[in-house]
Image (cartoon, rainbow, N blue to C red; front, side, top):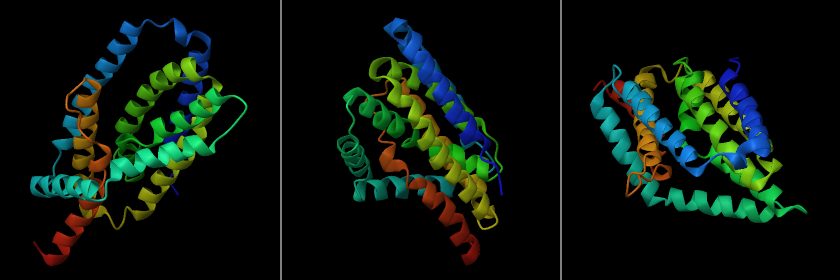
Length: 232
């Protein structure tokens, strides 16, 4: 069984980022925070472009992206994820409302994005840890800022990352013999999603609805297997 090294490191970095945020986060100028996220956006564009331009069938990549976006829109995936986050916020109660807010907001922030899914699958399929480590760096600053505003609850988002990303990594490793023909397509479609995140971090308007695009990963896993079975 593969060891989810990326998830463990990501969880530890979230603890570190939250701790630094509790100590000094409020002293960071707003302009510096904005600049850091813009630079990360540029880095994600470069990483996503490299992932997308791999040795893959571009037709399957395009079909996966289009069908995935259409499926996400049809099932209103973005709205459902937002509604789930709101229900979690209402159910988690404590004497300190900011603690609950930090816990839930932090967990959603570090788990709900495309990079958590793409990075975990990359690691589990033996494609490296570039995406999950890039996400880890972003999570450090994101949790630093969130913890400076909401308190220590953000620290416990590390548990959510460990369980969620670790589980996805182990699942991907378990499925890797079945996903052999789809590995390159999965990486390329994942690269498109990473580029979309980078563009959104740079302030692209209107922003790309990444949540509704997540089903593209499923099509990227399924279509190559279907085409191989049909002999296309």
